[in-house]
Length: 390
Ligand code: F3S
Image 1: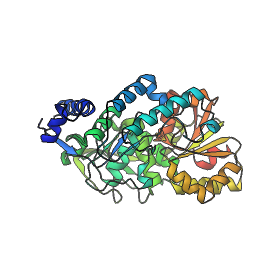
Image 2 (image 1 turned 90 degrees about the horizontal axis):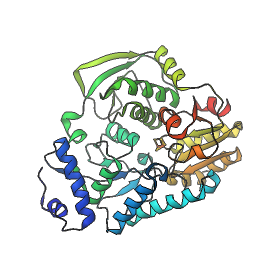
Image 3 (image 1 turned 90 degrees about the vertical axis):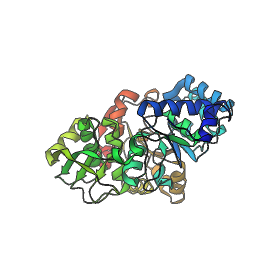
Image 4 (image 1 turned 180 degrees about the vertical axis):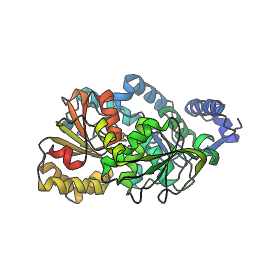
């Protein structure tokens, strides 16, 4: 694979050990996937942030890289961490976990990476434009960037996104290229999709049958960004889907002539919802997977202002939107009803299993897919009103 002069200098170690190691990773990836060259990126989203997922070995690796003088060349930010940096005690996070988590965030900050920890960066103004190349690592953010924004990213892992951030480039292959941005599965949605849970159930069902094909949808007449993020996140969780199209909504629409066609009916929706929900009453409800938008936080506040839930509940979001919700009074309403607005983290990457919860409620197909295995939780899945007041 061809490297330009600057990339070659990094590869040869002329710009330091951290750049050398990072360019080595990128060049190796490029070779595996047949990239002819690198492409500059405008931002990187780095996964591998929670101490729960990367452990001591991950922390040691990051601290070592920071000590070698690693510095990012493009605006870079983080996936959710294992706790709210400010409210970890209120969340019930163990103290030794909190200390390690802070060390991880400090190592990233030393490399010049923003401590913004969110899986929905597009809700806080990080919105690469149509055709813009980025290296993002969180599966739902990848699906949103590729599909809803029309930006271009491969499914980066934590190390490859970090390497791309340090070098400012990524290998030019996969979803960066026009020829790979097509759908091979065409779904005509024949039923009405109402709340987030319907979009989560649709995504969950289609992800399971996608088998490495990108889906395209007809029949979805309108959907705001919270519904689109939930659809993409759910397909990413059950089928690793990085790109999808919706007729009339997504900026790109490119369906292969020989795409398999199928209908998604009312009966399919009902079956999808029932397959996810245990029917149990949750002891904790977690909203915001991917991280909640301001309108979702408002919706929860409006709901719990009228009626107090009988279980604990969290709304997970970014620090920026949490602060905005605070100014608008939503957080106080939620807290008065016994809830917590948590920033920087989520129900899946925090140590939920160590915090005494057994049944967790969600309206997200992605959280429903991960909570049983990663957090040892039974799942109550449904619309907001159902899970909060079940
Ligand atoms: Fe985000 Fe956590 Fe869901 S990282 S997409 S809220 S599992």
